[in-house]
Length: 412
Image (cartoon, rainbow, N blue to C red):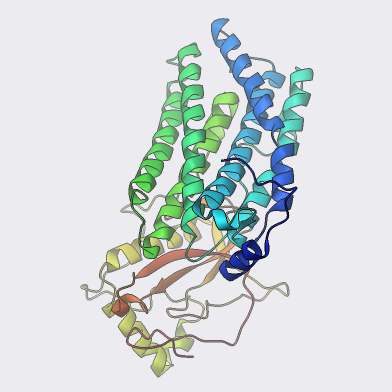
């Protein structure tokens, strides 16, 4: 879909419709979209270079650093531009009445993506002119996508935009992988690296296919988060895959941060076991306090009664505990050095800070991020879903308390 005509000011009806939907203007984003079109030109140059290298039988493990840097930086600029454009176009297509306006979550995400296109395009051009330029010497690679903007539930057009971006990025990533595999020399020597690339491609394609299946019909809002998580995972996998095929020297040290929960890991007992601890989701730092609260006892009891898949709930907590045991995460602290304590909602889980990149419940968390594990049964009696999700954000101390009350309203 074409971009909105900025020469025409939004009519009163358009502004009213956008205001009713809580949308914000996207004029600035459209300006960055036009400027970011250079990313496609750089991507075309990179693909021509990749094909020439393949025809010459070049070994990408041993090409000049500027060559790998050009391929990698062009790829990153292309992916970021694609995500931003597809998010905008999907929202415009969903409701032509508000073309030129987008939901806040879309505005934030597009802003963050477009905001990095110029720097990656510049690096690509610099590398094309300087064969000795090694971008890995100045930038942490493989780079991650910008942080995902949060919305509950995520708007359906936003999800469709993410899916369109995943399709576009996936097709280019799979072609790049195919060309890379065909040009690999000493396949036995690099067998393990190639297996890692294929695994990453499979991870991205599976998440993308699953999300597409869920989006075939208009899904219930309760499924939006599950779709969003899979699309995030797919886009992140393809983003990394493109970088690794461009600069294969990164593969050996590539780490998803996934913490395996093995038989050696302490697994939490389920409610049907005599060893079950109903307070296992509550922050260990504050369990004693909550156990003294009669209302908290009742809330915890009802939470587990309405959980139809406690093993799924406990599996995520097992992953969190395993990450804590390995030092990948720790309890978050305030600026003064005291711990933030527990989340204000039942079951009052701990608030963590990520010490090194880690993947929990399929979600990649980055160093410095804060998160907590939200488990909520309040909407189950109304036909809603039982909530199990990670909340990523900035947390601050509060005196608010929310008790679980599936039979009524939230209790404070």
